[in-house]
Figure 1 (cartoon, helix red, strand yellow):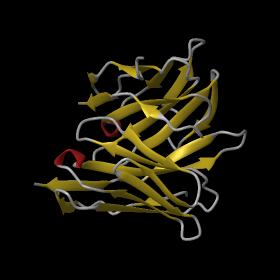
Figure 2 (cartoon, helix red, strand yellow):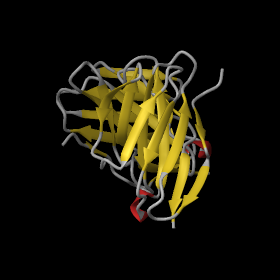
Figure 3 (cartoon, rainbow over the protein chains, first blue to last red):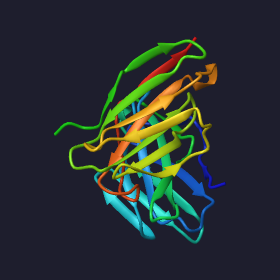
Length: 114
Length: 113
């Protein structure tokens, strides 16, 4: 069973602070990792993807990947109330025939309070 | 450009009935995947189709089936509905296989009475 572990939260941070969201995964063969944001009642929206060890930055978001520790994180700088949502971590594991299927964590609820 | 579109947005059924959900991928995307999401959980993979062929199947009973059409749109069918099938059903598309980032539609919320 390929698993993704996330703390369900809620994680509460003040406006302007850095929010740190964490995810661990069990499949050492995983090569691709994704972070999705999901507002209540809406569908997931892709925020970041990362394939290589290290950091990847996009605006206020930074994804960090450590394959040796099987750990991926998402940092949100200058958090805004509009960032309040559930953040889903996902990784891909390969199927025979060259396809991949994503496995999602249950998500971490983030609350940014003014 | 239009994103992934799903229909209907909401659906109410009773136990034992069957349902068909529809999805149109982003233009140019050839891969469609279906997910079930229950409250408080992440999306659970049901099927992946690429170039009209099933490429992957999650741990769901045979009551669930799907197909992809020549225009890359897709249908998810669920027979003999159970109360536990109540969920948000999400369709996601990507250019090729699921190794590409997937983009989700708004989903179909299915309620079983």
